[in-house]
Length: 452
Ligand SMILES: Cc1cc2nc3c(=O)[nH]c(=O)nc-3n(C[C@H](O)[C@H](O)[C@H](O)COP(=O)(O)OP(=O)(O)OC[C@H]3O[C@@H](n4cnc5c(N)ncnc54)[C@H](O)[C@@H]3O)c2cc1C
Image (cartoon, rainbow, N blue to C red; front, side, top):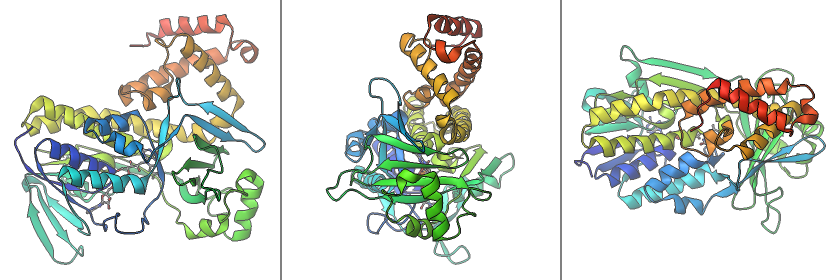
């Protein structure tokens, strides 16, 4: 327990509500503000995207004993199902049934708010926070940006208000505050595969479905009600783009030609396509993340990622685990807690931003490429034979608690080794021969790859 403080968390999203539970358990009074209505009272109309929860997310939920409640609404996915034009290939994600878990964002958020309320946090909805006085941890809240505001003072404020954070906005106006934001030229749109009449799933329930098509791709994740939430990612402009799909006829023709096995399972394709918004994807980086012992940013508010590694929420949850470790280590010395927190998380946030960006290519193109698949087969065989010497990058990111920065650095070295292996004569026929294993061992030895 720490000395009890009055703490405001701005944002009742996934990160804000989990953080509220941690802060309550540490002995604080916690008020959570959100500009939106209580999503438990309305028909959830935000992004209903499913999220893939992996090890880092589960660890943070376990840390306050709420993981089992979340497991009830999660579906394990132990493999990718790659829908080529003429066949489906299945690829296991890890070993021993290692899985990522599909969870509906809306359902998870509702559950997290319930759990935070049960823990004793107080929620204030329909409260737009427009500004914060950093040195006094005072929030300024009102209906309109140019209208009347009320001011509420706290001992400390956390900005968990997402990629376009107002709390960060105020911090940006200090000198020596670094900030960058980069939009992808690829956007996304949601589509829907309903359940069968008997409530069963129309596609394999325990797979993350991908239709990799190079510059664009479709993905589908299972829901507990038998449906799938699909997302099509494609460029805004160009030949195969949102701009080129202007009417129902062109959308239907595009799907029939390029994604033929979706026609039967997405009955409302053209209606959904024009009804659902096309959204943008942004990478946002900034530093510092904290102001004295008064204000700290957490989750998307300090590191928004593109979603291709399925790690945005997981990384935000890991921020909380790490913050909590420093709370336990440094007691009531919040200046040190904040300083260690931001120093420890920033390189990892940058690493997962880079990995997420790179994974767009891997998901949309490489998964359909024979050479890439051969590479993965060789890596898998080697890592099965020498698990202590080789953990594939995807597993390091998804099924481990080692740092993202380490995963990126080791992944780059592994990439160099695999480039050499792929240049071996007749590698296509010899991929499972002992000389390939020996070559990898020799290259590892030379590269001083750290395999602890
Ligand atoms: C298409 C897509 C797929 C994704 N898939 C995955 C995945 O598979 N796995 C994964 O780990 N991550 C995934 N992510 C990332 C994940 O959604 C985010 O990282 C996560 O939602 C961040 O949570 P957060 O609580 O920090 O921010 P948010 O979820 O953005 O919540 C911010 C909250 O703050 C409130 N707020 C904002 N401004 C104010 C204000 N001024 N005053 C008061 N309240 C305010 C908002 O209403 C909101 O409730 C995906 C993201 C996208 C876009």
